[in-house]
Image 1: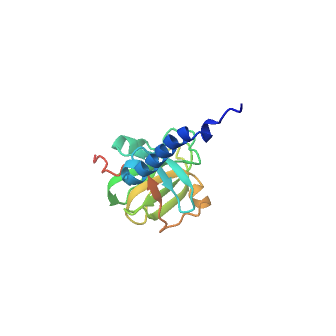
Image 2: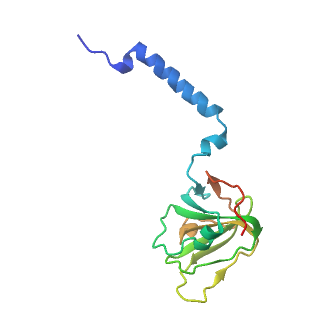
Image 3: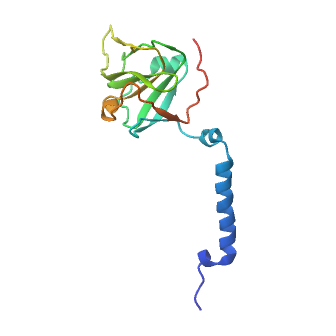
Length: 169
């Protein structure tokens, strides 16, 4: 006698098909925000480079940024959320690694890029300011924006980010 495979048994196939159809239905019926609510925050450049994001929302998180870190991975970034568009100035004090600083408008379009901002080891540290007002700032490992061909006017896509207004100091 030959043993029958479970995958060929009509008794087992029917419940598996029903379960698969139910999962497909539930996934398509759920609102997009619900599907993304558990998603890890990510930024995606126009060329497809994707970055896992840390979100700097509070004044303390924004003040610290990437200070005192020895490295930033090629697929890591930090997104700074501000309550309003402005000429948000950044500096590299106490940063140990160079970074690309990317300023974005409300629609997530690049308004200015400071590539390869070097670490600042002694005061006074220079400030980096965009040429236009920006609503958000994204920091990534130095050289990434150039390698990705990122340019002013490009739109960066985000997933899993809570865009609720940050604390106002």
